[in-house]
Image (tube, rainbow, N blue to C red):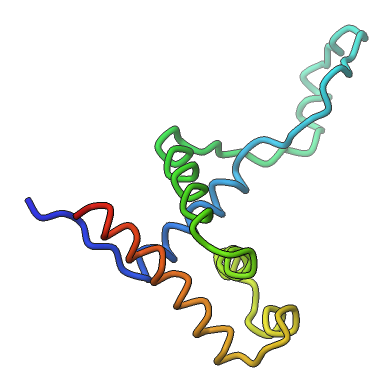
Length: 128
């Protein structure tokens, strides 16, 4: 069976999935604080009158493994390239990105594609 050949689009999709996985992780809470009050026992009528809480979908173990793999990839890039890739993975508009970087849209797009191509080339070289 042929090995998977990475492209810039594959790497971009991988980063978008990693960003979505990060958003699904539970929030970090400060250690050491706890509640000593007893659990409140509610009646059936009180439970029915409550606002429904949104259902939280937790990421799978495979998604977390792919997220950790993505963290290894960003070490191959410079700081500005890392920010650019994560901003695009978060679907941040190009207008905001160009304002932050101080470049025009085509330059930011070229830098983004170059960073993705760097990662793809490194992954393909490691597979060979």
